[in-house]
Image (cartoon, rainbow, N blue to C red; front, side, top):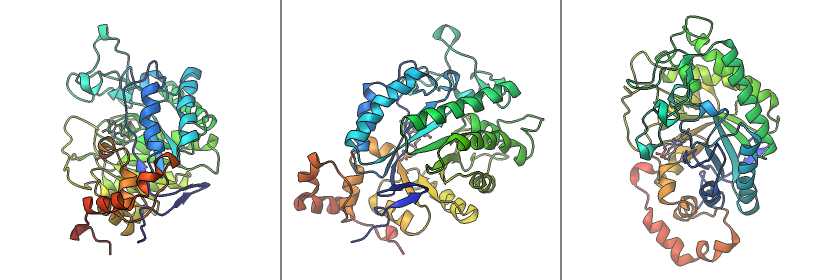
Length: 377
Ligand SMILES: Cc1cc2nc3c(=O)[nH]c(=O)nc-3n(C[C@H](O)[C@H](O)[C@H](O)COP(=O)(O)O)c2cc1C
């Protein structure tokens, strides 16, 4: 058998062994932005799990850009050292390439962790001032952010640049810029959040200006041979919001600045988002952006069946497939998916006796029988 999903893919000087990607997953388990043992386990299991690429959770480029006080950070020497320990483990034992997602939470910062209710922190709970494109809160009861002035924009841009330099020192193979889910970059892009009336608000060209400035500044210090991509929300799922057509224009502009791929996610800009959930519900956006902006894409969102994942890349809807929640069910998903598709993927020698065991490989194929609708053309 041959598989497109388990075939290599190259961006600049980085070749991933296969197109299964570990999507960023916030763990809300850092201390002052510093990665802990949890991160060692969380990222380590994926680095050794047969995936082509592991992308860390959103790493905040400055403290006020954290969603919660426990979010991972990359603004200090301490943060760099703590993440360095995780990277050394992943390098020593993992087969996957390692990417980092760099982020700023904007007006969605300063909240409780999901398992504590996600609500904004109160003043006596350590709330901090949030910033955004405009002084519009995410939803009723949320913090009203400070509308960023030029000095704030310079500070945030420089923080992204410094984080890019730290990421290179840490040996990351690639960077993904978080420009989705209603966080700071998306808050500039979307007319729902951005009501500025200067050069950074109004028409699409103006709303894209700051995210593009940040991307260009990062690209300028990120090594030429290393890829850099962007995760965007392809639609706000709201009337008068950001659209898939806007995403194509943004992707074209990013591409011109040296962006190597787009990860097509969606939603997150307000409490009014009406998501239409379903298996592979965002694949159509990856397909559209790939076709119309002529840039590689990563599909994400409710993709779990190995044959479905295979069909997404084999049919040219996307170049890579990222998974998140399914991997929390099964951190060894890539190895199981490879067995189900009757191909091999990289694995640590310690586990080879299982992965090469014909009885189990056959069981894996039974476990993931192809469904007629998934058959690749
Ligand atoms: C626990 C958890 C944390 C997440 N954290 C991030 C994050 O840091 N950055 C991001 O862009 N998306 C984040 N996401 C979204 C996922 O990367 C992914 O896009 C989404 O869950 C849809 O994929 P899935 O259906 O395979 O889970 C997170 C999702 C989960 C479940």
